[in-house]
Length: 433
Ligand code: LLP
Image (cartoon, rainbow, N blue to C red; front, side):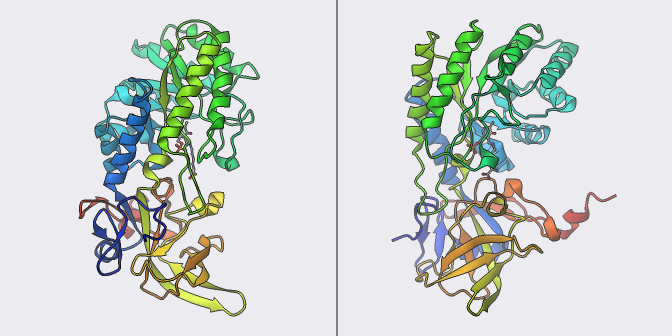
């Protein structure tokens, strides 16, 4: 039986040599050829998730926009793949917008987010013809009005509302509650002021509402609670301009064998039924729906490979094994206390007979990738595979301690292709003038 099958990409297998493989590629061979740390994405799994999302929502309505939240991983290969699979894309800054345009995304399929967009980013979006922007604050509405009228164009906007729903997830990644840096609160009246301000501006075209209650959610009931509040708000606003309801992202994934996330189909049912029921309750026609999944599209498709170097046992305390990456390529354990479960790519079937602490190579005691890793005895040269690192791994990577960021390869049908080369030392100093 495949160990940790539920957190690895579905193509994970054990080779005749006893190595872990993904997409038909031996991970030990990939580590050898491309060096470590190495981020490996199963292209079939990425496409599979994109299709699963489109199909699940198509069961409910023909025109749901599945918007890939590119912050989860915005490599060019991924953006091109998302575009080919018919997804839209959510960008949260001028930089992500640039990346989406460079990957060939038609501007009308781009949704621009950000809680502090500046005039330059707004100008870039208008010049590119970005289809829809999600406004987050009054300051921004003024900028859109000024920049759009200066260009003689009319910009489609959604108003991001915070419904006052607090989902059960880490506080750093819950966003729908009243006390949030994101969006306009419905409760305090700010959301209504935003709707009125946009309606009053001739260069702005209000097309709907947006709400994102949080990320890594297992409990789907939050979507119903949010939809109820947002529907009441839409009804109170009147008008027939609120035709699009963007319900944000947030579907959780399994990081460990104990995590049991909802299936995409159940998520689609929950979101679509919540909107249908609540809009009917308030007497409004069913709006077009959009969703913005990030993590659930790329998370499970990606693994990170590290090479073990130093190990030590402090008698009566614990054993440490250090790898050649750490907080510079995977910040989630340090930032959110996220738990991952490693296995050895070179001998995945060996009995995990001990608990050790898997640490990185950074000058920080907090640079702990896995606090309590169940592994067989490890030695220098072993290749550690950390599953479910495809989301918010490389996209949150840094160069702390001058550690170069990893290469990224896509694997499919036994073929591997480098989609992002490893950073070099020269890259580290290239911007210093
Ligand atoms: N839409 C909006 C407006 C968002 O803010 C986010 C995530 C998403 C969609 C995508 O959510 P997802 O489907 O990936 O849950 N760095 C954190 C996650 C931050 C999420 C930020 N917003 C982590 O590593 O857990």
